Length: 244
Image 1 (cartoon, rainbow, N blue to C red):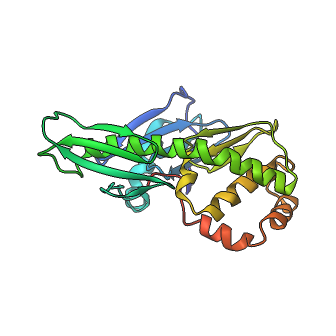
Image 2 (image 1 turned 180 degrees about the vertical axis):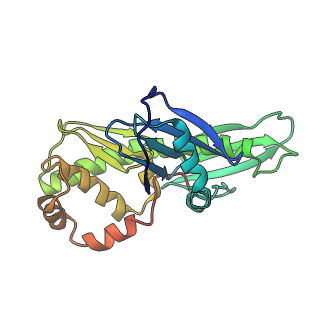
């Protein structure tokens, strides 16, 4: 959403952060070329307002406050991790109340991740959930580093693509990327998707090794390697790169 505002004196471009309704942290940034105020809520729940360089931060704050109801509707529900939950493709989460502990501790092995916590604490305590979430990220990274590079190599060989390297990262707003040097980055959260969706993302980035822009030639090439393209793209719109 956007709101045109009157021109004001230029100020510093350092980000400004404030607490909206004593609950939501909002970051306001000045961006060259912006003529409007823009508000976004990312998949991880972070709230960002971008304003023209000549606008005052008060304008971004006022705009965010005026859109409080919309922001609340966009904030994703808190993820509560449960004992026995499957994480990615082959890890299982164990939340274990344990006598003699003063704080939560986690251990990630080949197929399990265990979070032990003080016996008299509740498993949905935010301190336990934070430790569990961090352990889940480590597990997803292990899976991604083990499974995604060989899968990418197999798909590249099958469809005649080539690339110059692959890296696993935790990305906030996208599933992967490919730069002009044909270096591919893949999101560790891919391990939470069905394999047909994972293959779609890998083929998407492989196609970028030949065609960088999302124009008709790109989607025509994608159709050739993903025959069920429309259905898969529809499924992808139901997923976000966040821990779930």
